[in-house]
Image (cartoon, rainbow over all chains, first blue to last red; front, side, top):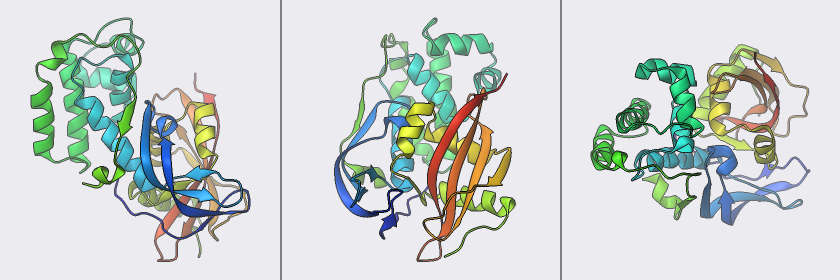
Length: 177
Length: 108
């Protein structure tokens, strides 16, 4: 997913025009599936209804950024995070289970918090996700190695009990790198 | 500006535009996603593995053509329909507007 931002005025569904605007905060949670907000975003605001939206290139970048943040989190994955990485792979619970050589019920149990993911399966899930990102040219192999190297020991730590803490993307420009 | 004229063309158009980030959700698209429990990953999967594509009787706002894409969500347990407008922008690039997500249908 690459970046090619739309710059001209765009018709809004209300009959107004969406004009380029700096948005103080934009909540990506509904798009990403985790609690993610970005400050100081280049977006669009309707000159009639005041509604706001952002370009798809930014949504794609925030999505990819979030996957990496979850994959490098310094604790064992909790249910929400395991589910998020599995969905990032575009895999059903059955498909992920088959790839990991385990039962679908085990994946379902991780995701609803009935069972903790083991350190080994945590590491494999992160590895599968990052390898997929490399295959999609969203990450270079060295970054994958670096991330997996940095989480080798932390996957042994207990996962946080509840929903993942909000992921704040402080500077959208940093996503362009 | 113009848009695709067949379902096959619409599929190619949408995949190319989405993969390259040349899309924009309408202002209320995010609300529909929240209401229907659909994320952008589900939308991407619907576009990539759509079961069928139909012309969508909506008024194009960018001079393109409107389509409805049907496909399973990532979890494979719901069928989602996504309404889009496909059009060429000022520079001749294929682009789409994400108009709406219809209520998912449970797959048994």
